[in-house]
Image (cartoon, rainbow, N blue to C red):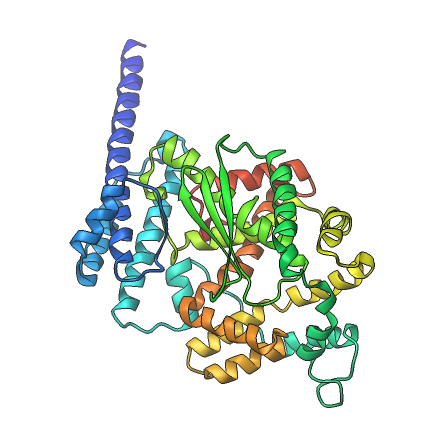
Length: 436
């Protein structure tokens, strides 16, 4: 009995010691990874989306200006080092296993980004697999034609071959009454944020000092952006180049704020950086698998915060009046918007064909006008986004679909369970290949 007890204690000590050594080695890899992200940011200004680690790390990256070759070589070395670290799953902490996978995928994506910056050309699907750990489904034109036919029946006027203009022209004319006047935009947006925040706080514990600021900007390739500054603070920017419609108020408030990007980054900082000391989460590499989770949860967060009936009630009673928009056509408007959402993968197809060299920019714009029902200025802005961010577009629609399936599989129709699973995902290192 004593011998058995001694062996059990010894085994426990060895497991504990091995776990501590593995954790130390993982921490070393994590810190080197964070430095590499900052180093790559010197070559690609869009690469570092957020950083709230030690300021001297950023200063060091700016001073050193490592070459792409040096960054790539160190990334390869880190991948090998990480593979040699003993498996710590025996400790029974799933988060440790997820952390290891996170570092592997993030470093591999960084290495792929280095190769791209050095001139390597990847096809759309190969690029998204390398950078975002996922590949979006491809759809034939006939898929979008079926949805377009339904929209044709909903939008007044004749088809493109008759008088009345093309579908995008008639759609723009039809939805003009739903534009938020510029002088009322901030009022409407603040009301939407207030409601999204209240609904989120009812289910998710956020740091007491979390905060955000809203800025209205122009001349950007995107409609909205969350710049996370650390210490649980975000700056949310809204692009006012083009008209903003009433449905975008809740979309932007939920996606950029609550329970979207602001909540995601705040929970990562609180639960992983501060509570666990995982420094890899103090830096956010935009072109990485993390972005699919970030964009997917931000998009799906709208449906976590509101059921369709709850959203309709709030908008009819609060946002429509605040914007000075007649709510009598709200039901009709959202039937059309639901169909428009089904066309979101048309953006992926335009990006896939443009990046693969199958079509040029003009043809891509024509495609977006026809199959995404975009007016020319909106299609042109989308092309600018695709040229700058390339396969990143999959993170919005595919990301939302993957997150939705993951959460609904675990929560079913239980609204409270949905919130708890959603918050758990926001606070973890789980990545696309882990959304099973």
